Amino acid sequence: MIETAPVVAADIGGTHSRLSLISRADRTARPLDIRKYHKFRNADYGSLGEILDEFLAGVDCRNIRGAAIASAGYFVGDDLIAANLPWRVSLADIRARLGLDAICGINDFVAVAYGTLYLNPADVVALNHRAVRPEQGAIAVLGPGTGLGASVLMQGATGPRALNTEAGQSGFSPETDIEVEIFKLLRSQYGFVPVEKLLSGPGLLNIYNALGTINGRVVSLSSPEEISEAALANSDSAAVEALSLFCEMLGSAVGNFALSYGARGGMYLAGGILPKIRNFLIESGFMDRFTAKGDMRPFLEAIPVNLIEHGQLGVIGAAGWYMDSLSSN
Image (cartoon, rainbow, N blue to C red; front, side, top):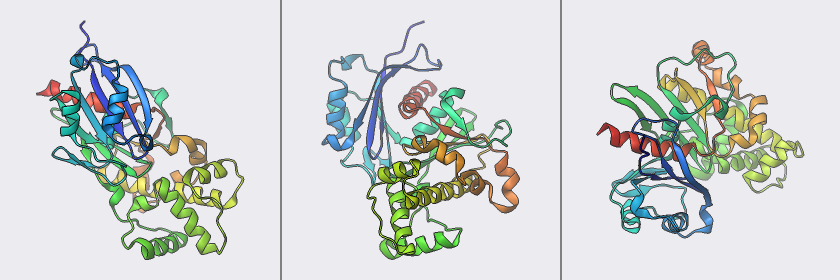
């Protein structure tokens, strides 16, 4: 069996970029073969081109089949429209830099959704212990990081297709009195309050600061990382309150997303934040809020909900999407 030529797969998030060289044994083989992988901190580089240059140093690009660039935001032609990246991304620039014509761009959560096809049981933690076995139907993926990403994987006659969504930009809907107060504060600051203003790293900081204002207390922590660490260590009651509320709001948002797309095939949580707070999330009110949808509770209780703990799923999904797209042409 002859291994296919490798693909450069990139998963570009708001904070980190993950790059990999990936190949597979034949046109349909799973799993994929990760030849090389590295994670980069975006703030340390002036462009995606600089990251590519460093990653591909010593690699003969003549042996590369193509490239799949998965990024937060969405592509219009060759140009990426994204709110959370420190630099411009252009597929035309990357083609010229690498000397490759076969380069495509997709949303990063489209790549993660496609990557669920390659998951093993050891790659996930089950959160819904009432769930039945996955049914035929949509598979939904949602996750907070620098922003809030989401996608849906649909099974069609010609194979799986992942939908690009901007669910993180939909309006936040408060469900409790304290959430109404937080919403009012953020609305006075921002006008429109998208859900990612609360369900993201910066969103956790917004929740923490808003609770300080509402409760009339001076806040001492200044970053999402500090808040998460203090909450996990149980060393700051305000941080514990903020992270608990974050998890509860996330449960509501994930339940809404699962209902919107009828995700009977499963609901997956991804992103850079949740694996770091796994035990806190499990013990939080996340699942209670996920199922608290009135008459739709039985529908949601049957849906498998899993936390993804596979750090390379974005690049695997991007490469798999690219290879399968070529195979279907």
